[in-house]
Image (cartoon, rainbow, N blue to C red):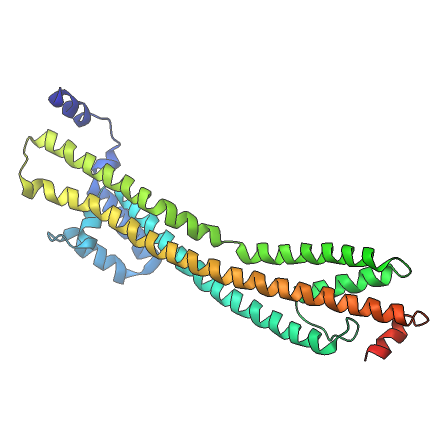
Length: 279
């Protein structure tokens, strides 16, 4: 039974380029030379000719499926670090903008007296002003409710913008080990096919193929572990950003309530004169 299974694997119809590692390496070296120059291409060429079991040499000895898995995991790792760096800078800038706008509005103590700020706080202030001016003569409770709804919509939009791209990190962290495991299974399968074809179980013959296959799992873990840690870090940053947005929204609603109370106490004053009084 075992011999029949081994024979079945041995005669599997594989594409010619899947078995021809040398041709795959030649194409890879050619692409590398075109994209990155002779430096990296020379290292790949030397690794392909090397008889050692260094990581780069094992990569060059692997077939095209395992190579594709390793390259994909490497690109995923680079993408994870790039997303993390970009989001850290984005959250830092957004936090400074909200902090400056919060201090400005808090010092002004009135929507009309607040100097121009940056989004999303500027959008909240503009929405509150527009609804207040469009609802002159209407009950204050309705104005506050409509402004609260609009401010929450702006807050949710800003939170979604901050969250964009972060799920990619979670996906990399969740799937990279399994993708690496797929490369390992494929490589070990090829090793067993080689054993069946040669009829030898000599460890020196079998070990290089298994080592190449296990390298795919190692690269998958190298991509997944940092991605999970970076995802958790960005989740904390975004949670803090959401808290700042909630504070800004609360300040806008509180300032609007103060403006409405001021207008109720001075009913004869219009919006233009109310601005003067607030200042």
